[in-house]
Length: 494
Ligand code: TNX
Image (cartoon, rainbow, N blue to C red; front, side, top):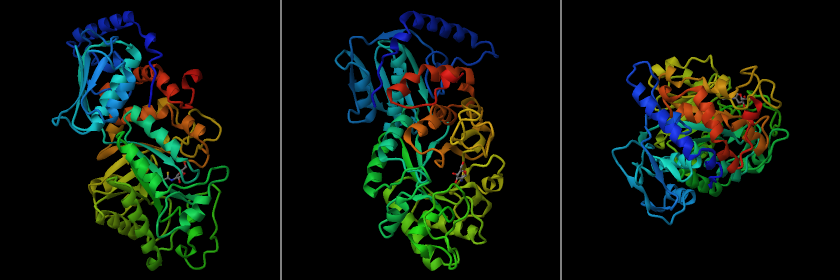
């Protein structure tokens, strides 16, 4: 990932001087109880906003170059090698500090630069923040010092690779883009009625038949286990966990088309499906002798290929008297492997044995309170704020409106408040792909809205503000350009 410093000149030394005055001004005004906290983000454009007040105390000139020391094999070090001229005397040190929490970092820019963190992800995040500063200030950096830590441990992006397949190269690029904004969970919806994308060794027809199917106009394909293992490794070095989902026991037409036995006797619809209807297919839950070996082989594969603590088992949009029993069984099976299941909200209606199971809330009016009261945690994906298959604006072509007629504009997304909910693991924005068939359309739906998701997941309410956010993402737009993102042109659209 290489980001040019081509727009560094947009902030000159004079701008930095005036910014310092702003910083000093706000420092004295903190004595007035009503004055807003002078966040670093009001001084330097950083997304997501750091959870820290930081003042600027001068400038550090790095025009003669720097020397980077510590953790030289880390992605953070590699990234900074591309950010700076690496032949000079100013030291940039990457160092461990076990007193910091996972993913957090301390950044000090003084006569030298130091990034401290308890883990490589924290170092990477410190380096990402530093890079955003360098992009704006070039070789005359504001001296500052602060410690920054994430509000939530789940800051997610979901891509539905089942309706339309997304080639592995797109996922690599997406991991890089997520890491730029400290997003850390890439949830892959790997199966649905229209397609099956994960190789399962004992059930080869899943990808032979289901891998060759897609929604009409979408792409077919599948990922080999080797493809996925390599992606998992690459993502992990960038702080991103790949969370696999196989949707069970509904949304299973691609599996049924591959292995007809999985359907109940008498079901005549046994072929692949390329429409957009939901809720019509299911595994035959009265045939445990057929579905159990299948489900266990699928979960075993997910556990084997993906080291993620969380394994998503779907559970949405199905009516069956045995549904609750099935979800308890599948959750227990995941738990027996030392992992925790995640399922869509509907499963939260049923009493699970494993209270470490997590529910993903998606209908704004669904009440997960009983499950929360039983001790479960939730991932917040309310459709009217986070469903990125809905338009960037009302009436955008090829978008859904079932959840919100006027789409999910960025400002609407940003107005969501995770702090209003209990037992929150984090926030995630799903991109369903019935109407999103190619990479460019996906980029348009994902960006810049995922920058909003990143900030809701990382920054506490005190440091969040729509005006400030819209200014900051505008300043960072060159990062998206440099990364080749075909984002929705939100600035032109204002
Ligand atoms: C509902 S959200 C679904 C998906 C569709 C999506 C379209 C959820 C758990 N299920 O199967 O793709 O709506 O917006």
